[in-house]
Length: 131
Image 1 (cartoon, rainbow, N blue to C red):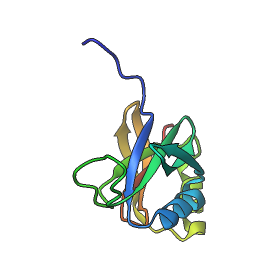
Image 2: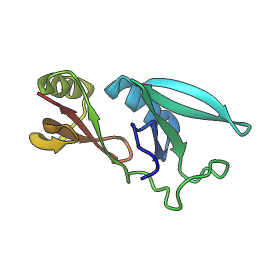
Image 3: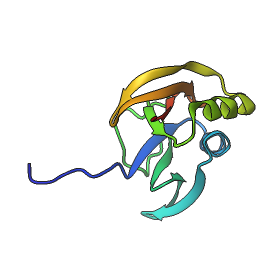
Image 4: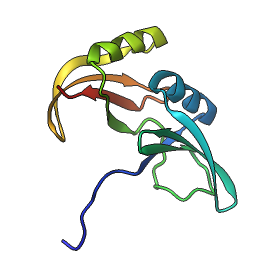
């Protein structure tokens, strides 16, 4: 192999309502809104740690992306250093229903405890904690 992958830099979330999506991720997951210019247009991202989610409204013609940009097609796992009980407590305080968990899963670094829930477009979000 001629190169090595180090990490994910960003993921694009296709959404039906940019403002509602951004507000939800800020409130529930503590992400920070960032606006940036690209090819003469303002784009919105949600920053967390050393990564970000670029937030793309479905059907945006000036943003080259996948052929199928349907909202609700993302299934992603985010890692927290916090205990899973803190995640559950925060989701409850935010009025976010847990779809599954806590449940033992196997992540990139081995066993972890996960909780699953949905964002406003029904993207599946998994938040996990390693022991």
